[in-house]
Length: 230
Image (cartoon, rainbow, N blue to C red; front, side, top):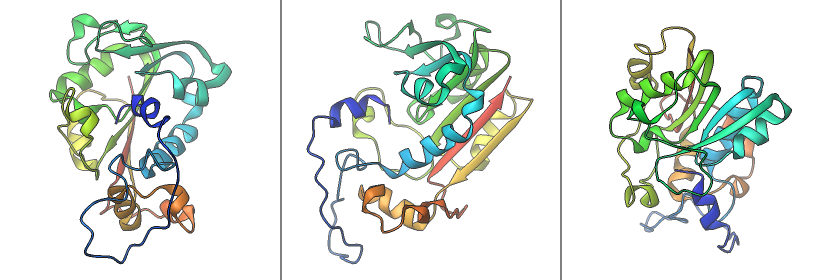
């Protein structure tokens, strides 16, 4: 889900009510916005923990999709310049208008770090997108990416450009290894509690103990992270 969703839900009321896991007659989620209207979505917990753990790699000339939020938050003074990529001409935050499946629209060997969170799920031509991610980086540059493994459809994205894929660590190995032949680290995060909560739109603040999310069960790959160096 693109970070723009945060601009939308900023205007929504963030009142949480007590939630129950034991009512098997309810077919509608607590939140249809993945919890963005209620607090901190479960996937954001994993995304931000991942970027914080890799903060030392966010430095130099940094590229991010749609916003520079994470570049500034986790890169700090290590970031010399940050750029924002968006495919839609005229997008107000973009410094580069380009398509991750069209190398002719993108610079080459330009960035020390490319932060690409929750984006590959919404691109049909994945092989081209991964190749373009490689093209954008300087030699030695690093891609920091996250993708959804278990998630509802993002209706916002589906209605605009499409919501195509859910991943596993195995599918990402097959996708990235032929392109990023150097250092490649792929990890999954989540467990049955995290997956159930995320599908319901239950947020981190609803949980009795948020550290329960830190227990990883690789059969419930809610979020998958990629560190790929050129």
